Length: 497
Image 1 (cartoon, helix red, strand yellow):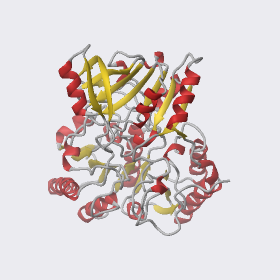
Image 2 (image 1 turned 60 degrees about the horizontal axis):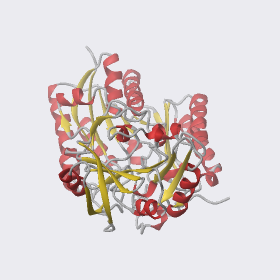
Image 3 (image 1 turned 120 degrees about the vertical axis):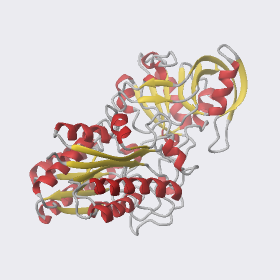
């Protein structure tokens, strides 16, 4: 008889100080992502997408496993998940799990989770979901995949048989992580007993802009992770560098290992934590104020044959920003940044107004600023209009459908253009520009609402990348927020040399 394994997922990255909470409807209709889906449609809807569950399904198919689909959902990063949303979705997953058991024994469970979700009542939302799942399935083997921005907790480690974090940021290995979690689950079923485990938190927060695995200071950490894992023969050595915007005790970086013995697991965890601690000063912030960033981009673009990229990191929709602050746009206009294209401003009202006006029209309106109350009044010429639907082609999202809603390419000043969309989204794929008729490699200055994910597709074409600080909730230095629930002694910034 083939193994019978239940699969599902519940993904959110929660920013305790973001301007908007995350509602149930945000999981039902998450823009370009697959909305809340349950039962058999889940498998068809996920296959072929660039998400962890797709990789898990592929690995299970290759092993001849019978999959029992539960429910899966995602919502864009924002404020904490409202209780209604958590309770309804958790109940749906658990009810389907109960029905699956009514139909016959389960050999295992795999869940596609994020790891940095906070709900109104449960600061460790994944830990609570796993508690409920464990109450239903008991000791049935259970593995999960998580984003490396996971704020990993002891409860998550104890309530799962193995945790497989992605190993890249930008996250180009999401399906691979899901496949690894499924492989671990199959091995756990085969061995017939749990692995020993170890867990340890790191005592300083790593800034988002220092977490990119494409380059130092983070790339050597993952090289070392691989070396330690190989030498200690762990089943999995997971490093989560945390999401430093969640106001609860376990926010921050942590390491977990699963091995034959507790001594082996502890040895691996200790070695990696020691390595990260020894490099603490290398994780310092490296950002530039908006005024200086734009000035430097203009200077460089005057002689460069390739685009200068400015990352608007603090309004990153992938970290809880709304994608609509206008501080960097105002600076582009003030400094007359010729050849600059800003991707994007998330403003459904403005996009609809541009569509009503039509291509070639010039209209004056207050653009953006819905999340912070600071719009920018511009007189813009409408250059191109689209429905915002296309397919991602870059390393992170290749094959995933995008749905930005009504979209407009506008010129807000001579030589300065903006892509305005109706659905919140982070800019990590060049196809956003191409679908409005722009080839990113031909632009002088590209301004992107993103912190790190953009690097997968845009860094290869860039002459230089400048990470700028302009208004937005995903502040480069999270210590400015009024945290109340952190554990004693954790440092909100790395120590300086």
